[in-house]
Length: 345
Image: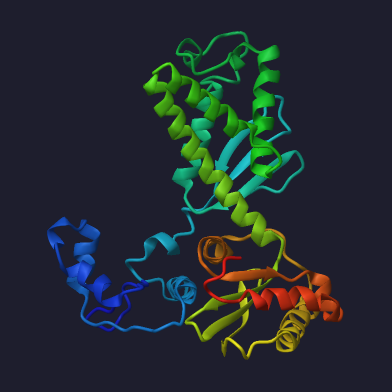
């Protein structure tokens, strides 16, 4: 969307462009002020057609970052990104939310997360559930206000309660590492027990806690998926006769092309894998492990596309890129055999 001076003020995507554009101009009284202001500045439209919704998402993401339109503040704001920082180098292990991770001994950090608000809410819900909302943790042997309100297990009293507090932090670490989800199970068990005795207020509170913590798990899955620096072969059906092939490394599309369904065979796919993944691996100086803020939007798009669409994908191990892939003929053949858009992965 452009204003009277031909400046791009908004970038968006739509499966049905006509319906999406109409939605801005119909029932305008119900729109928030931000949308009303945007509509009043629209003087022209420009559109780009893509073969798949996946490409539209990635294109939208790239254009927003490059052009930084006035009304796309959410994706262009880097201040909204947040990390969870856990201090293990202190007697009382502590969780902090920060925009700038500190790599140091005795400190663990997780992220980045798109929404600082969502992270703060999740951490608060965990602290509420385990009653580690101590309002005066530095003061020992004196109960804090939250202790009298039932929100603190007694961290402020010192002694064994510090050890209990640290064990709870360990559960949070295991959850974020993906090694143990017992924290989630405990909240769910309490929710179900409360519902059984008709304590709906407690059950509702546990449900809120569960939903908030689920956000952290989902984002960690996206980050872990990207960290593994995967080589992905993706096929999406465009019609009964036409498919589109994508070769993606980490979150960069190395190759994309449309093929008639019966024209994409194992030999061609082997050639494309070696020509694209092998060269990119050979030229790569050092594999990145951390996921930066600039990568996160694309990482989320790719992750959700793979897990929520009818596309088919296959992970190509790094050694396939370095050596001959003739030994994996059967696997590639099976992958192509199931390439129909109507066949589930």
